[in-house]
Amino acid sequence: MQQGTTAHGATAGTGVIGVVGAGTMGTGIAQCLAEAGHRVVVVDPAEEALATARARVRDGIRMARLFRGAPSAVSMDEALDAITWTQDLRDLAGARFVLECATERIPLKEKIFRELDEVCPPGAVFATVTSAIPVERLAAQTERPGQVLGMHFMNPAPLKEAVEVARCPETSDATLNTALELLAGIGKHGIVVADGPGFVSNRVLMLTVNEAATVVQQGTADPATVDRIFQECFGHAMGPLATADLIGLDTIVDTLYVLLECTGDDRFQPCALLRQRVEDGHLGRKTGEGFHPYPAHAGIRSPRPR
Ligand code: NAD
Image 1 (cartoon, protein in one colour):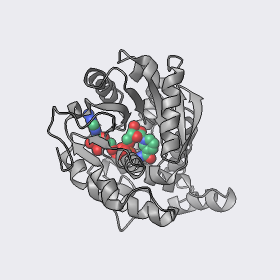
Image 2 (image 1 turned 60 degrees about the vertical axis):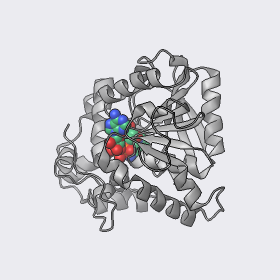
Image 3 (image 1 turned 90 degrees about the vertical axis):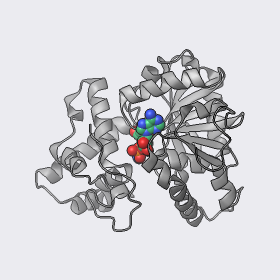
Image 4 (image 1 turned 90 degrees about the horizontal axis):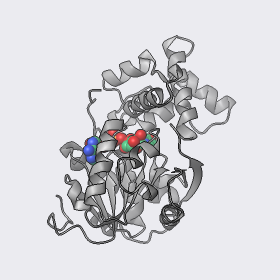
């Protein structure tokens, strides 16, 4: 466990908010919570993720303050010190709310939810930030399905105002209200949808990204031209391939496989070019190259095997 933490077993304090996964979304969400004055415990078994996490949050705070311009409730040091980093999920024994932001793999997340259910207090609410996995599959791993919902933050989390909130039939009103209040407290609002593979956002976006990559693969246009069509013709802020680079091409491929498995719809089969980029370690912004080059990058990741 790293600086700012009590010893394991003493719990990291009653009422803390847990974040599982210290990748792109986990660090972004931890930043949002810490800047709003919450104490946060972030769990990630990967040493390489934890090694760079505090620096990535510091960069994220600088960036958010630059873009937002508004004064923050806490200083940079107070925000950074409010986050505890650990490899041990049992350090969430005192958490009242947990946001699960681990890698987009169904068996991995199912295991995490089983473990969270054992470790966390009976009243704790669990939210998954999954891009596509039906929340009820994860809720079914617990003895508290009424206290589980989806909170699909967008990336970069500190700069996005809205969160797609997925409610299962079992999700209680109290759980939904707790989640919406948490969002309000960090300056965001939820848009509530029903549970389902990919919810609204990724059911649509992942097909678009896959088709945009296919267009490049077939030689119809290069990545820059594909994105220009969306920006200059449709007025989108970003094209689909720049969006894919921001999300992470590994996460895109994982999400497409989840959608393929959960819907049985072959349109979600990731195209060869997407799979090749991931195999080559070109994951987008986080590695410095995806469909576009990013010379100044955080460099936190090597490609992971499927
Ligand atoms: P990422 O690859 O950047 O980070 C995932 C992290 O999970 C890694 O640091 C990994 O070490 C960690 N992890 C793996 N196994 C774990 C375990 N057992 N316990 C705790 N941590 C574990 O991925 P990301 O982009 O942050 O995505 C995380 C989740 O958020 C995924 O479900 C993804 O679909 C979703 N999401 C991503 C985006 C995006 O734009 N990247 C947007 C919305 C939602």
